[in-house]
Image (cartoon, rainbow, N blue to C red; front, side, top):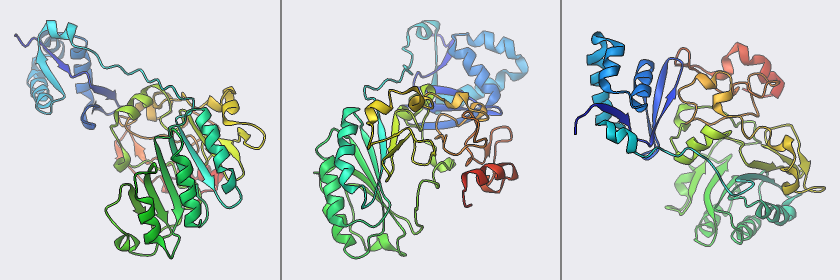
Length: 359
């Protein structure tokens, strides 16, 4: 075989940023930054342009640099040298994103006033084939009620359940152990407002992830913060991001008043479970209007190399009147490749005040 061509493996996708670009390896779920100039080179090579033509186009003075970088990419196992036959017959990666369920994930807020309505909420989520559920207890809840909630979810087609609740105090180790069995669908428990070193006195290991936070979570105003440590090259989430909104697509929330929203942090109410159903709500175009706003459509984000391994937030944006505005709680600038504290940016002050956020 004569190495006349070079191509990225089909599971390695390119993302162009303003200053630099990114290779996303969806099989190994890792990403690698590359110079912006190499994006153009790799695009040409992925389009089956021969290496010789690329060298001619970029000139002899750049040939050594291109060769060295291609060798680096080969060593990192993002691509390979090949011949023209391979370029025509290697399969491409399918980036179509389709899911059968009408709602993919849901968030339910619970307190003593709507605890008895939870079974009805579950029935409605079953109607729309929801797969992932997060339950946020807004107040300390008796362990017996928590167990009852988990027992109800175990009878559904849900794939996983996550719980967020305040530190319950006495009896916590027993409650943690009781939750740790294969009969429920719990994958994560987050306790907040915890005393120091709470996690150290709790049983381990567990069949689910346990997180103990000292700070109190009083609502969803804390959500939407963009951090590099939260970047994830998860194949499903990346493909979803290429096609839809990476946060709100097929998502629904019900608060303690029974109000149905796209997200608990949003002010827009789509309906109330006392007078309508989730299934009926999502048939209204207003309910799905944000589902297909991709990162490629959002101001500034569309120029960011990290956009498809990042999350999104339409609840808090830099311009509250613009649904295509950049997430408010992002401090990254793709034009300088620098990070800054978003809460200290004077240009964001008006939006911070609009949302009533304490920063």
